[in-house]
Length: 271
Image 1 (cartoon, rainbow, N blue to C red):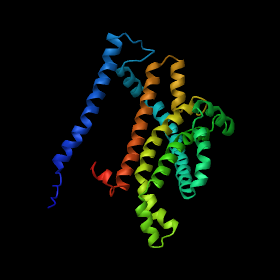
Image 2: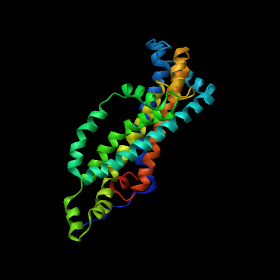
Image 3: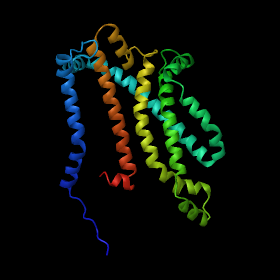
Image 4: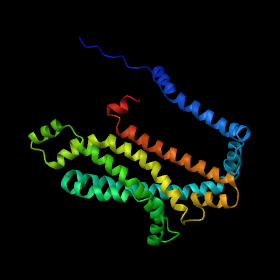
């Protein structure tokens, strides 16, 4: 005789969320305390290596206008690269999943392209689009996003229960219907996992691309110029802003995933 598990109450769900996040909050607090007191006072870490957290926060408040302008410029570059790289990767994965021999032939070249260090690629994009063009940074972010999204999407499209495909074909479903009703829905968890990784990589690509040229107000340029002027607290404040943007970008993709996949068991277990 089967039994039905009781639905957890709101209090129980809240308790589970607290237990899930509490270790991360504790580690975060200990890390900030070590940054503020342990490193400078006990270990004697110099300011040019790592300023106190309070000094970084003070620089963040004092230079907030400059940092916000830089953050907006860099975020636009990262978002453009995220959309471009992920969109092309998903389209390519659909093509490669449909024509597998073609995909097997191209995959070694894609792996080789992904192995190119992004630092070596950045000057090339500046030569293509111009030193001050945002498209060079968008391209760098897109290249970083492309491969993980392609691989995960392709894996999701091909890791389908064969019985489901055979059932669709037994009803005389076309290959397009198989993709639309079986392969694409089954691949969505893989796609969103890749998109969450790509959101962080896009921020990295945009910031790194700024080091090789771009708007003088971009976040990477702020970090570089602040270090050259020995404004170490400002440079770390800019790094902190970039980290916050990366976390926010990741969280936004995770929220979209929770809404789009609310029917999926993996999402239902987390809610």
